[in-house]
Image 1 (cartoon, rainbow, N blue to C red):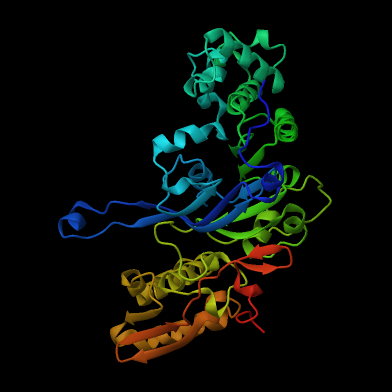
Image 2: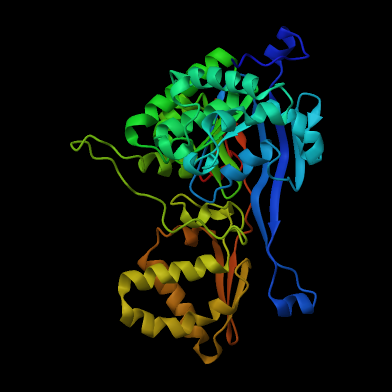
Length: 437
């Protein structure tokens, strides 16, 4: 039966030292450009799936990684196990830097670092009996001397995860199990070598509602019995509140807020976290909860917004949050959506030049020719019609230079994590040197 992992450090040292320390971790993917661009020496775009993450994982805790799809939480979890090769940074685990180890050097450490995948139906080989699948890690690491010994250890692991009596499940194929039973078998396989860390990637999202709580309760019991540490990846804040000791909110590859779960839910600091919490369904039909969710969608990770990556969707964005040409275009699109086709037909040709401007430019030059004065008037009209639009807080000036209209934005500042009580948050609203008065 799986037991608590052995360690070469003393109990006192283990209690003091974190399980894992992550510093300046980056996982970037190069996107190949067009064939023509490659012929002329052009470079493709870079997706910063994980972008400068710093994190300390304490022994025995459950850390939740929460965010929308595309936020980088799964990539970060896989990087911690060496399943994704970091571009740069440090992953300290004991005396090892996992970010710098080759795959053959990582293999002995996989006994201590395991993963529970999202889809239990795909995580098990459909042609492999449960006993063989669960005992497979033992054979890979040379921990058993015979198939019979592996089968016995598999039975003990199945009993541990609630598939009892184990004899009823050992010879079954995955197709003969329910979704919840498959996930229990996957967890049994993950713990059979006695790991220290389990990265659980949405482990209940594909299960029936009736079994989700039971799987989470099982994982908490295993944590207590086996001294496990969890990284729990989810987009579901409701389960994170139940399951996690700390929560890290991710957006476009970065941690924008991290702290104790109770503190995050009681008083979220980052506007993105506040929006996620407002999106949690409330089963009480008599309670009216504001649903002022973020406007727009997550931006393209290959071309993240300037300054604070959340600023295009943030209702509280102000001068230093980072404004650029594409924000101006997005403002007009929202205006035309509200005013209708006639406004678009009239105003669209005047602002069409925005599409030809580098979207990352803070100084926007629009070639309007003889219509330059009309475009200046249109910008003034749009500002007067919606003075609360956050974009205008970042505009330093609108000027006409002959047939060109120049829109100057204040230089954006990339927010770093800073402490606010027990929470670390990356938001200018909590920076005393930048926040609005």
